[in-house]
Length: 430
Image (cartoon, rainbow, N blue to C red; front, side, top):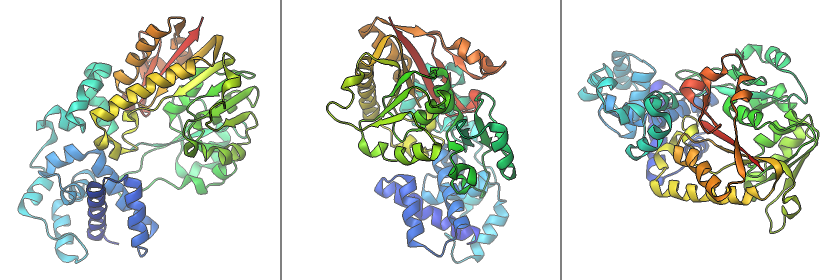
């Protein structure tokens, strides 16, 4: 497929997402099933246009002067991918598979008529207006820079499974992909973001992944597992385990010693963990499906209870940009209630002297510092653990990359930390 046809396809997908309120992944999958003539490279390019359009929806709409699917797709290709306006105009005029010729307004916009630096800050930040106070209260003067970093493509981060390999060996095996050692995670590998029509490699077809030597995991998520400081021989409850990414990270940190109990209230979210545990060579993870008494025997016994809490997902908007526009104030309120409930439930499993770790992939203070402050009012016997020294152990310049907060917690952000947005607080039960 040529560029005009790819733009038309992206417009179809964006229209489908808008009209049916569907996740972008589902819309792209269904488009591919209905257009089997499109090769994998074509589908990847269409996906790049769609994801880039959603990441920077407001800023692109400002620059091109409209918020339609057509306008957004044209803005991605002409402004972000920097295909010359004259070249694009010629392509669209001569290709019957395209969305039609450029209008005069579109042509002038693609020539740079509407510079972004003249737009209101919320548009430059590519966020909904109501989200700004929640972000600004956490990030202060850095909020705009961080939001802009959240609107660009993320890298592909991998965690080396030290039960099966070491980082240097895996870097050699993946050399053809241009991997880099992560700056903070000692087991992290980064493949830089692709640009334009280029796509990330399909890492799940690689031998290193098939043999369980690597897992796909953002460096920020890896750091949350590392800073929670599980030790070999510990009893650990991963209370919101989902597909098991943190549980697998703990297993490697603990050298397959001790016991990890992986639990999630949603049975379907747990489903992938069984195959992942097998592939990674993990022997100390015990899956506990939801049930009335599935965790009764763990009360007051855990050295570490890790809560990867349900949240707005504002820290991972660059990976799930459609979620940025679906989030509502009512949905955020529901998440805050869920976070309070899950903390209350998890606290009962921490032994005296044990640690409760609370993590979110959110950059909203309301979901992070405010939740921990409210929890401590209800449970004054849980005292904050300062994570600063653990951060210092990561690298000599780690403090310049990680937000070490006054309450002992840490925040990771895309502009400063070059990771997704994460928050981690640890509390020790007296």
